[in-house]
Image 1: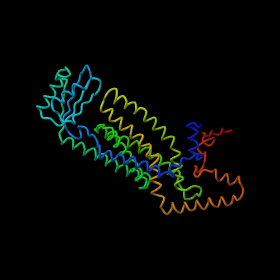
Image 2: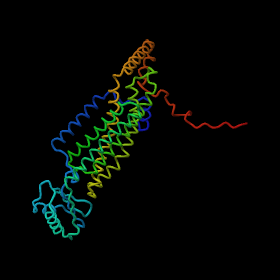
Image 3: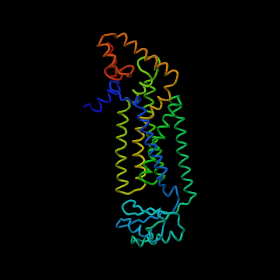
Image 4: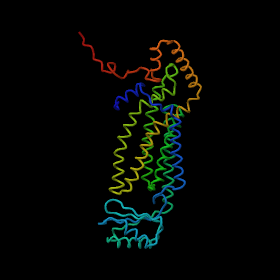
Length: 367
């Protein structure tokens, strides 16, 4: 069985090739199915916006010796608070109650009842009210931040690669990452907080970085691609994804493992809401971002370019050249086998980065 290093070398040289471009319809079908499920969950279950987005009153009890949600739930029932009221533990000695916006008298009554229920001083119970103006302002700023991010990213990729099609392909892959993250949040019922937005922007940057690496390899492989008749543009693009595949997997594993640890610690051990929100977003987004950069971004780019006149004409030239080479081989079985075994795409100067040529040159001693 090949180890990862051997597989990486074979993928880079073209001796082994995963058909990312040829199987693109399969990847599209899977991505569209996941997006459809996310949209259905968003329309039926919906998101669970935190108090910063919907407004309301938050009461926090600290310094609790025996951490339990039961006393708070009993107080919520006795006070006749709405069914949407949420009781959660935060940290090792705190309980948080989030409910609809309360008046000053209702907030004081809730604070007193919670202090008695947990046998703590009223000074250990704090109440914060967030009005509709504040929550709407947070929502609008979050949306504004996402839109601004997309505009700047699209302009940057367009300027860097000198083609708007790479920018569109990258942004479509980012949209996939957002929808997958939103779908998981709708399915799990986790609160959407400002920390979630921070996490989304972080994973978009991570996904974008991975996509730009692949696109940069495509640009390298397709430099003067019309001057050769060995490989078509889609085949050279597929080679680029194969060459960066192992790197993408390694980077994702290294990034996801500490985030998974943070998610476990934040959600199940410390009960820290901010840690949990950021970690869940990063965990989902890193996985989705890696998959989209490998399975979606490049296939989308190829589909947008495959009808260009230059690409069509070059593909015809490559097909004709291959037919001519096969005809020249004639009935020679070794020549035919050699042509069949040759990779569809490989680095134009195979191995130029290896061996003696890559070693530093010693200066000749003067006699």
